[in-house]
Image 1 (cartoon, helix red, strand yellow):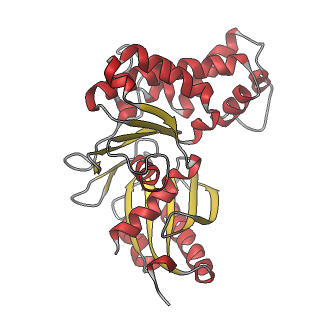
Image 2 (tube, rainbow, N blue to C red):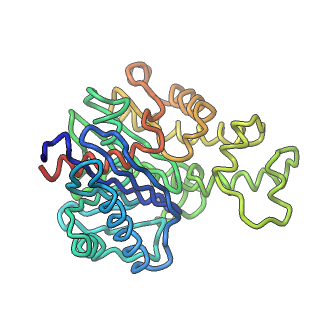
Image 3 (cartoon, rainbow, N blue to C red):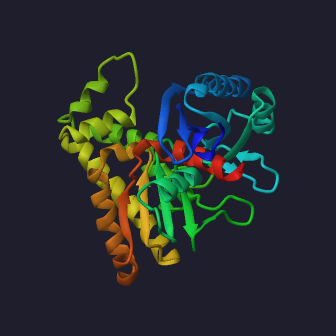
Length: 323
Ligand SMILES: [Zn+2]
């Protein structure tokens, strides 16, 4: 029997340091899920890792249903006309010219590539908090900051597919250089690695934080997950860093809300595990910056699917692309 209800899809999101993979049914339920560290040193290693993941899930799929296609999200610019990944700002050592073709050839599967934030938006729109809405912006905050935009009930991709690069909005004209080459992008203050950088700067001046332990010799560096956990556990300095991060995000969001007048903005990605500690200052700053009527008509919420928005969106876009 091969009904649509029986159809399965693989969703994969390349999250910078991690790859998240899930097996998903045609209504967005997650049947299997795993997270692995990314092989990011060489293109060949990343290609074989993606092929291996698809093969592994392909072998495990038959007990659940019929596997149809896979969707892969990458943190970069994908050209809609050529289907090539053109820029991966946070994985500059990876050349992606033949990534999609190589994976389809090796696995014999239909595979669609898209920007990770677009897929997060698609997931929340089809299966999460934005179901039934027409004008929605999804913002993902992790290793980078991206956004996916839905306008008038359609994904807004721009002329060549590059729309939504909110993380590369200039937020500080005198700021530091961004991975994209510009100066003072939102990402240079509010992405995971830059939250770590700002936390480290504060720790030099203030040793009361629980994260001061990272100045002792250790087997690893501080990560943004450590700061998220510290903030949740009540560490005041970590909370101050997120409050400031919310201030930067709110500055960018105020402009975006004035520009597009959306009915909902969703925040997702690994940093959003910190929840209201970040969401509240984002909302407060946005209220200061946006036109009142634009702000009043826009719900600003956390992703309902949490860290799974992207993999679910990847699978569901594969469902809708290969009917
Ligand atoms: Zn940038």
